[in-house]
Length: 121
Image (cartoon, rainbow, N blue to C red; front, side, top):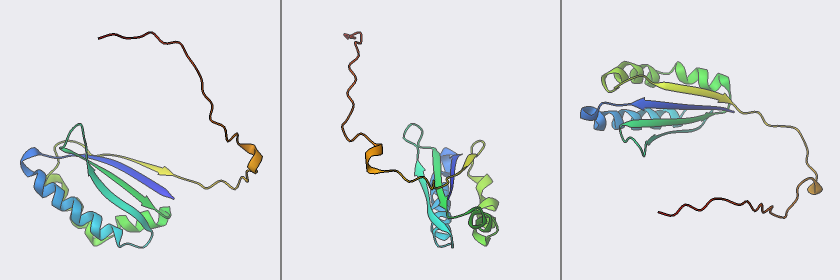
């Protein structure tokens, strides 16, 4: 599985346009073969930063996404709403074939007591 995370700083004056552009992109991308999920979110600390999280079945599925008409349209319109650089990261998640036996894990929670300085306001 491939996971992509991106941040999109958008201009305040065209934020609604940016949100609509992102909605359209998400909807079209979710219909692609190999797309597990594709969602934009509004940042809590900065509502003018939109976050993108995508999950794809494979690198080939992601590559196919880059070659779609809706990606071409998105990339054409994106500069009009951006207020800075897009930053993205791609992660590959591999499933381990390791098999764990029931006794490999301790079902009891571990409690660690540690002395900490109390802070009084």
